[in-house]
Image (cartoon, rainbow, N blue to C red; front, side, top):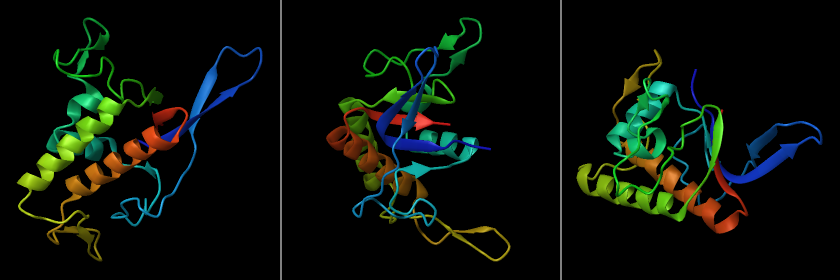
Amino acid sequence: MGYNISIGNAILNYTKGDERIDVNVESATHPDAPAHCPYTKDGNMRSPSYTAWSDFCKEAEIYELFYGKGWSRDERRYLECGDDFHRETPLLAEHPGAFALLPADHEYLQAARMKREQTNGGKPAGFWEIDSEWNEVDNGNDHVLARLLWLEFWVGWALDNCSIPTIKNT
């Protein structure tokens, strides 16, 4: 189990008389998109496991963007991030869910990517290889940088090219 994360233009689906509105994101590819992953190639959707995405967000230092400070069971709400953070609601506050993207989200991702590039020991963006027994083999690539580049590209692309720039998770 995991997320299906799509970044792009929101499409609203509505049937007159129905109280629900469904939000989808248009599929997109771009020749300049980071294509470090053979599954996502140059597309705007990826499907990480819940654990892989959470661990990535922690290691990339972008956890609060997607998860906030955490869920308060007592208060039945997400705890707010610090006063200097630009979002009241994290991007994965609802699962499934969809949220509009903000220019500040892109700036936040750019800063995280630049910090990663400066601190990862010069490793190139990419994923580890898988051997014949499905074990990960460290080939010197930085999977965190690869995911950050993907996020930064598609959030920037959505903000520049979409009438309703959105991130959706299902």
